[in-house]
Structures are given as C-alpha cells and as structure tokens.
Length: 270
Image (cartoon, rainbow, N blue to C red; front, side, top):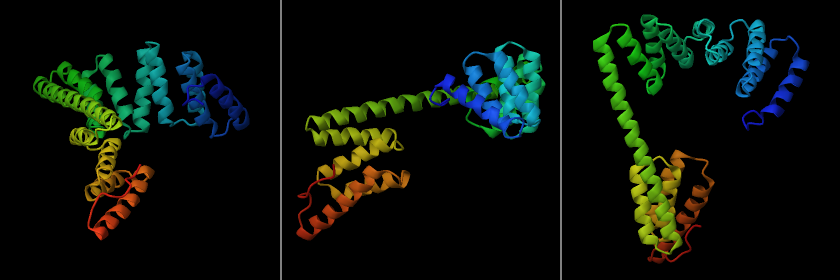
C-alpha cells in the first residue's frame, strides 16, 4: 500500500501490525516503515517518535538512524541530524547512503576535512553517483585541497557531459523507434526496419528496440537475420515471452524456407 502511495491505508495496517508485535524485535521494522509513511505525509514529529521506538528495540539499526537523520535535516536540526547520520555510518560503514549523508552533514557543519573522508568512502562504494562527487569536490575545496578539488571538478564536469550525451542518445533512440512503429503501421516496413536499426545502434540495451528490429526482419522474410536478433533479445532477457514465441516461429519458417529453397513465403510472427 505504501509503495502504491495509499499512505493512510498503509498506516492503518502498520498500526495493526504493531498491536500484534508489541515490543518484540520484529516490531522495530514496522516502526521504521510507519515512520517513513508519516514522513511522507509531512508528519515529522510522528516519524521521529516511531524511529525512536524502532531504535529502542534495535539499538544498532542503521537504516532507522539514516531516516532519523533525514527527518531532523528536514526540520533544520543540524546537530541532531549529524548525530543520527554518524550512528548510521558507524553501524553500516559499507552503506553508501550513510557515508554520503554523514559527509554532507559534516560539510554543512563546516567540518570539511572530516566530510572529505566520508564522501570519498561514499564515492568508492558508489563511483558513478553525481551528487556524491559534487559534494566531495566542494569538501576538498573548503578543506584547502585545491589541486585535488580542481581535478575532482573536472571529473564531475566530464561525467555530467557524458550523462547529458547519454540522455540525448536515449531520447533520440526512442524517437527513432516510435517513427519506426508509425511507418510499420503505415505499411512501410523497409523504412521502419531502418528506423529500428538506427535506434538499436544508439541504445543497444533497450529490449523493445531490438525486438522491434527482429520482428521487422522476420516480417520481411529475413528469417536468419531475425533469428540472430531474437536470440540477442533473449540473451538480455530470457523471460521475454514475445521474443520466445517469435523465435520458435522464425526457426520453423527458416527451416521450411531452406527446405523449399525459397525464403520468406511463410507467415511471419505477430
């Protein structure tokens, strides 16, 4: 219910669960989940109360401390937020979110050198996270590590440009695929095939683009080429039922075409 944003209904279920669980260790998780619902309903006082109950039952509950720090941060209670994030990182040193939040809190509290330590660790755990890299660059600069800060900034800028290019390519690939779908609806299958092929070149990991390419090849009677593409679809997603069905049909038609010596006269997969 919470994942579906039915927060009031979710809250009722968590309340009922807590009545049954009482003060058993299992109740710590329910208090934690209820706190997240309350925070999303903009009830920070209730969220704090539930998180404190959770931590009383599980004193080393890193996720609860992480949420506790976030609630205090939303209330601009920086000292309490810093304490909570410190506990989260202490109890879960391998959690990149805990290291990032602690590093960011230290930076906000003018403890740049200490912030660098935790932000470096967060970036080591999650190397491609742009927010972590940005905060690390700021911390290095404020800690007086000018050369490293400059190198960090250049790397962050390069990463941002790469992501922008990737986003642009993804949008272009989607546009080409949609144009292919429309061309196919208009009965222009060869033209649609070229649009699908261009989309796959730009984004080879989008299953739908490659599946459309494969089916277009089959519909044009190019069974062997279609089979190659369908097998690649299933290599990336073995559970793709549409590609599985199409592959069986394509294999049958390819075999029949070779037997007759004339490819492409059988019904293509739909």
